[in-house]
Image: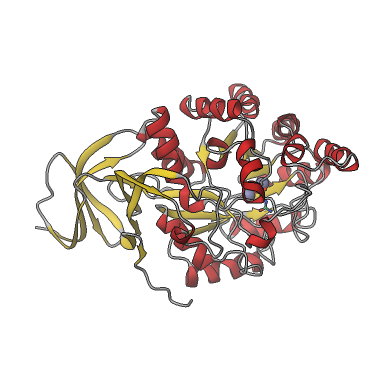
Length: 447
Ligand SMILES: NC(=O)NC(NC(N)=O)C(=O)[O-]
Ligand SMILES: [Zn+2]
Ligand SMILES: [Zn+2]
């Protein structure tokens, strides 16, 4: 009889295909056996009784900014990865900007990888940047294992990560296509946003609503249409990050129907917060593209339910509280939301409980789809030989999120004060328990 490292007994096992009751055995960081409706007879070093709990494939957050190296005072790999573990996330893809130096060449990538190996308690992967200065570095980044490339079509707000003009992005896409990689884009129109922002500010219109109106949905649509045309001309595979409205998703759907190789992400904040929250909460809820109105939020849920969204990433883009406090001019102050710890809570509370979104869909959007799209062949589901990245959740437990519950470097988030149903109890990364009952249980090599 086998003797495993770990057995999780009697949990409700959630995958993109089904929810079934069973046991999961783990050996050497991998799932060794899954037994449905029948107990695994073997014993294990450690056994977890998951009776009454749901076992999800560990979430893959395809969009975080952890800011390390260089801007660790904003976040960091240690605090960032701990917050993910507390939220049931077992793998993250770190964006190439907000860390200094940005991930735009092989050396900078290696720096980030070394730091992640020392400081992260979940699995790290990295996006490479596409900026006007680094087309000749795309190949080495690809060869050194980046997930894909990320470019900004409008200013990023970060001095050492320039947005790409149309010529550069076209050249970059040609190169990325030849490498067989993909390009993720922040798609907002520089012309539309800049012109509207200038007009608003020159008229002294600087409220939260003015800021939102200066970055309208049509600005996303214009940029998305343009980049789709470039994808069709170059053959480059595309991924549109943080679509804020179903109207943007519809443009992408239409391209998909024409056979364009394109996928789309939305974020928990567009599914749970509106312009009203921005007005009430202030800078803490400021992001780009901005939050939209209630009808847009509801429409985005329809897109999620219909399978029009491929992945949900947090776009965790943290900053110190002082940078989020906006007095007067809403055009000033950092754009980026601290939220990576709450993705599953939001999808369960606002999706599963409030809008009948099936648990299978949540597993697809947060694990199976990102694993498939970005080539993580051993992750994203609960099956034999897959990595033992698992998240145990009590769906019957509710809690109100408090600042002190957050593991971020800066304990603030627009989600503080919200009551969530569904609480992450245990997070397992490569077979090892890293978070249990509110506490991080893994020690770091260096901290
Ligand atoms: N520099 C950033 O972190 N930008 C991010 N900021 C947001 N979303 O407000 C982003 O993803 O665009
Ligand atoms: Zn962005
Ligand atoms: Zn981002």
